Length: 161
Image (cartoon, rainbow, N blue to C red):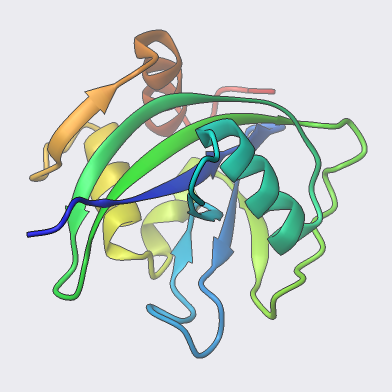
């Protein structure tokens, strides 16, 4: 089996809502909701990857990005290591412009369970919410940041920034 493909996913929370986007039309898992992001290029850092992906896909400018955790997820056709990156955006970037034909939106924690999610994102949200799915090869890079995200999912009524 080949090494997992490194993929970055942005965790952006504003005003108690989290940013999600759909997969590109016509592609793998088209129309499924996910944390926006994409594949890491050769010689690219994780922060550079998520900065590039958010700019290319959603016209968003990242000011800071750091890893929270990663998991390995196995699809029938490939294996990925999905790095969840906490991202801060420039202040004016709350309006999202979808540049690749996808949809995007800001969602409250209570709305996530009703969305058709990509399998890897569904497994991660279940784990963060307290269910323990088979999240294989979990690697936590920022325990405090990961716990803050878990608390956001478990306490959706609490005001957040």
